[in-house]
Image 1: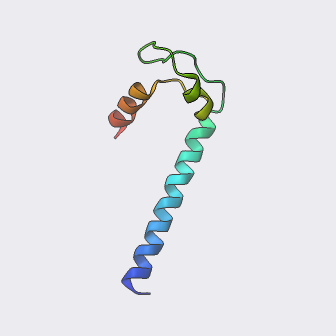
Image 2: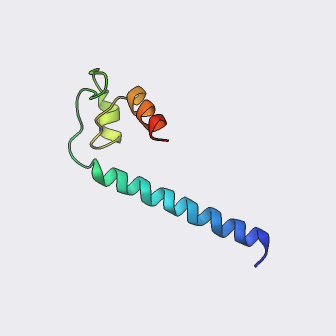
Image 3: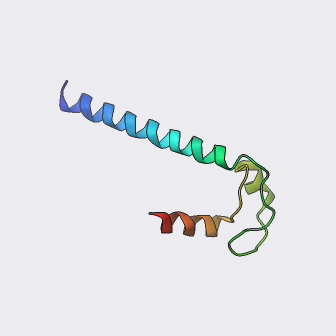
Length: 70
């Protein structure tokens, strides 16, 4: 196996791990979406509630939460 094959295999494994983590996170939030953000209290747009089942934060608060988790 050469370096290119190794890099390709590693990239594929990391992509699959990221997708698995994403699917697991979605499964946790499979319930009904909140109408108002638990972080700031602002209304969560209907389009976001449809696209992200179980959403509990607006885009801004979710982004902040993700940055703090790093």
